[in-house]
Length: 82
Image (cartoon, rainbow, N blue to C red; front, side, top):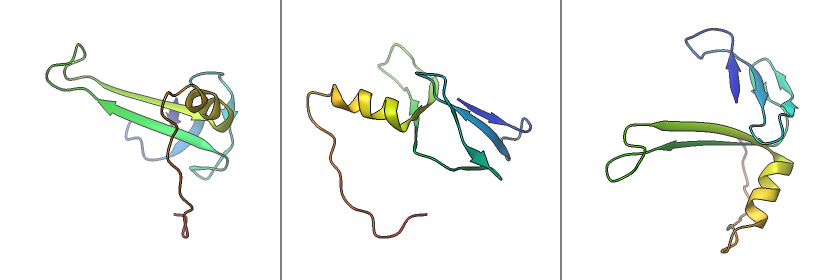
């Protein structure tokens, strides 16, 4: 869950893990620890037509989620981080 300073969603002030409720470290609008942010927009032929979901997971909860997948996640090393 992301909390912003105002309705314009410009300045991020807090990120809370949707699974365990851990508050992640945020400095000057930048998340300073491992965080998985997901957005899913549902369209036609879905029971959630026209709905968009957002959630955040801390790194520990992300690891728990992907451990239960039938097909493991793919990973590759990134040379440059944004």
